[in-house]
Image (cartoon, rainbow, N blue to C red; front, side):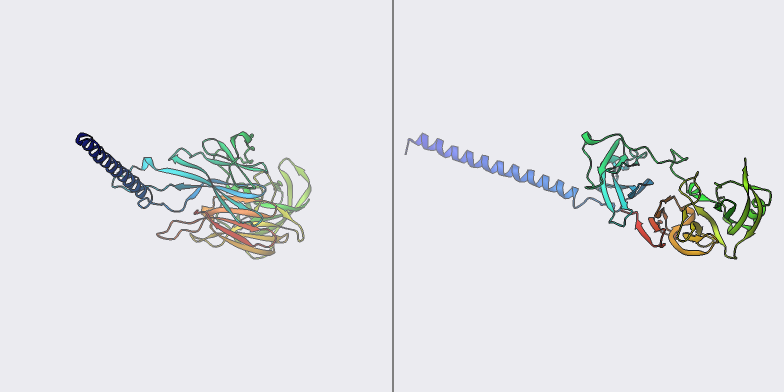
Length: 352
């Protein structure tokens, strides 16, 4: 049993231990409450800004159309929110040209505003898709996962364009006409343009840019001399073909130094034109034969005068732009891919 003093000491120790245990439990509960409150603040009270929007220009590779998409990251609302502290993530939106499902792959996060204004897609080397967002990186095209730093090689050279560093221009892909034989020309011209440019004695070169003008144009045929001079082949005679007109029409080509894209079975080409005058005019694509007969035509649904990019290829053409404006609404950015054989199209919203 021990002496009274020993019993007193033992009782005091047990009381001390109980107080210490209760204090530790109280501190633990307070810590848990603080952690829980912080979690609630970061989750339940965080604002998710929603979908992201496209950043910069799209790039066409041999397998995909690729764009960057920026997202404002979730934040905690306050009466005096400091927008300079907002952070962003950047993703790759990858659309396979074979009709496969698109992928949205996050590649950077926690970025401050303005730190990624020069971000861009660099292209593909077949195995990987490269980007530059404050430094080069790449993802594996089979797994859609980032490549380790040790596996990164030199990125591919940027695609040819005469508009770097500002990006590609729609006009680079539009031509006034094409040679249908060594001595025949099929062009899209307004009456005024035909009178001015297709006079007998004038010359035509194989590559002729389309004018950026809102004219009603129709097909014209020109017969040319066999010999070419410094300014091209001399025009011998001209005549309009048919009565149909197409607003702001031009032939489609791969780039500014190329002749228009040509097809066989049947022979033909592609024209881009505007559906109607005014603010509701959309971008149309049509396949025509070499006498101006339309084989198919497709409305992309994109505002013709807000069109940002045309990306032609062998089997399809992609268009990047927005829907026509509607009062009180922000125009939705879209990617539209049109097959050359049938005119069938796929449309992808770029709000991601």
